[in-house]
Length: 76
Image (cartoon, rainbow, N blue to C red; front, top):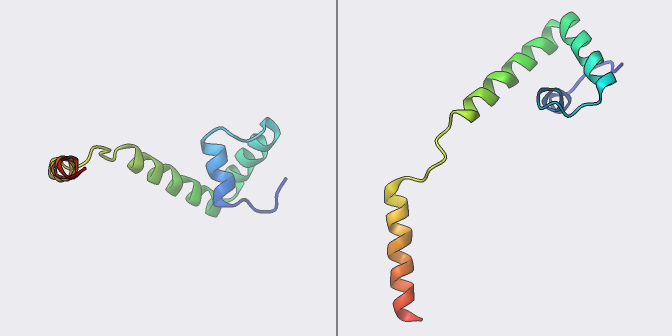
């Protein structure tokens, strides 16, 4: 078992990318280390916030790209 886990370790755990034995150790550490659990909980909140972001460009940005593309097409 690690003496301490990093945010990277916790992210791997959250995304289910740690070996089974390590999952068990991290789970135990989360149960006994309030500071580690706090960081874990913060990471879960950030991931939840990222999942709710809007991934579509603003319509005015699309229009600018299309205008630029149209303009370039006329000069080549």
